[in-house]
Amino acid sequence: MTDQPANLKAMIEHIAKSLVEAPGEVFIDEYEDGDEMVIELEVAEADLGKVIGRSGRVARALRTVLSAAGSKQNKRYALEIIE
Image 1 (cartoon, helix red, strand yellow):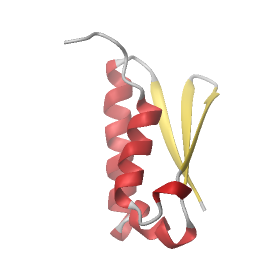
Image 2 (cartoon, one colour):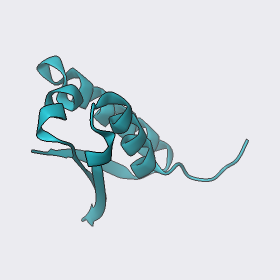
Image 3 (cartoon, one colour):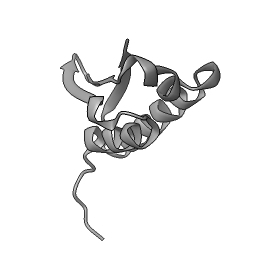
């Protein structure tokens, strides 16, 4: 088993591309905002509902996975879904 830190940006991109109908229109950006890393996820307008999910369940699950993986690295992560 390797001890390399997980590439969380690539993980979110992979999950998002698996969820949507147009994986070519998934764009990910990452920037630092104070003590927190922010990952921006942009998908096609028609796929926005699939990424957010009913009552925001899918988005909440993505944020939970991101937070759990970030806590293992002692970093704070946030996910922003761009409309």
